[in-house]
Length: 607
Image (cartoon, helix red, strand yellow):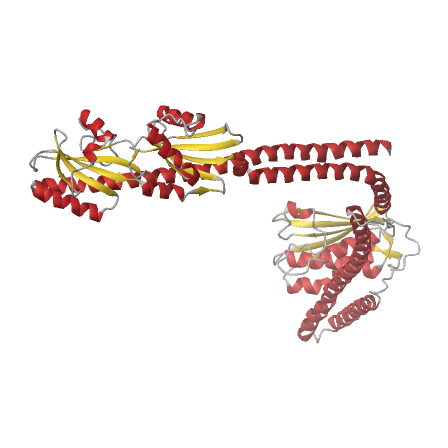
């Protein structure tokens, strides 16, 4: 049993511990990878949504300015008319605090303000005017020489503001630009409504990485401080290495790309930052979330999985040590029980007092043994029923022969009643066939307790001659001739005259049914030194070679009708008489059956 214990320990380690550890390692790896991929994909989608919302917000304001420029251009408005149009647009679009029409020299021509235009007095406008209104980039859907915008700055009310301009053609008195002062306070609110978990937020950076909007209200003051100081370098800590790296990477990657970084923060903690470029504006949308929160669910699952793996390993080792001995005993009992069942001792049972799988296996083994006993009894009953069915079918088959002989002789009797010899033959035939019927009835009474065949010395010539005479009427009805060829000396065997006659009549009747009219059926006897032979041959249709191998099996027949029991009964009778039967056949020429039995001395033969 030591070898079994060692194999059990090795099997436990190989089949359970190693796969469990491998599964745990692979699960931990894919859990981390899958969680990171899921979190990154989710935050990336949020960043892209922020970028798209910001782009649409700015593009909408620029499109409004384009529509105003087109209206001024098509209406050929005078400065006074242009002044009224600008005031109307400011009322309709509150995002525009001021709209001013300037000529090519950057002088105000008309303004939405009641007094002098203030847009032209801002440092941003002065810087832009000195550069020929070379404002920022043009968004999608606009021409770069038709729409421009300035960087974001903070106005006197400490609110984020930017200048946008649309070119006006020569239809106005002086061509130039429509310059609008746009408050992007709504951009703050839009970004502030975005939350990633409980600690994550979004922010928007300008072309140089300057902070334009921040999702954390506590951080918005940095935008104002930076703008007031005129800095775009992040002196207050907003422009840190993470945002710098994201902006630089997006410049190199090109439009439509995204950058994912995980960095340690200067103030402590690790952060997951995803940056997406805002098309056409040169700005960047960043989604910012501490990794502690982003991967919190994965951390919990990892801890739970590791705990489960550790507990499973501990339980497995302890269970392997505790159950080692308890497994050996049931296995030994099962082996002994199996060997006993294999040896035919179906009353063997195993006693395994366990509620584990081995206990279930032991109970199943016992149920199997009980079931085998039941099946054995059932098979015996079925065999008895099948045997009864075969015997009954065979007896029915045999009863048809004498009744048919009596029937045929009765028909001939009606025609040949006046022939005394035939009346005498008819009487002998009826008496003989009724004797056969009585013997069949005796067999029916003894089905439950079959009786062995009685053996007496038989004269084969006398038996064959009687069979030929009894079957001649059947042959004549079918248009056939029965011929007999008997040996010159007396041939004696030990047998049952009824059973052997039954077998021979079956063969003759089959020959009659298989032979066309004008054919011949020959019954001959032959004596050898140790055996006697009965040969029954016909000139019928023959039997196919592939059917000869199963010719004597139950329910096998070469005829269109019948139960296929005739030749099987013949074979069983011959076997009971310790004889042999063989068949040879040629299709289209006929079939020959040869019955061979042991020969005994002629003295004492009673029939």
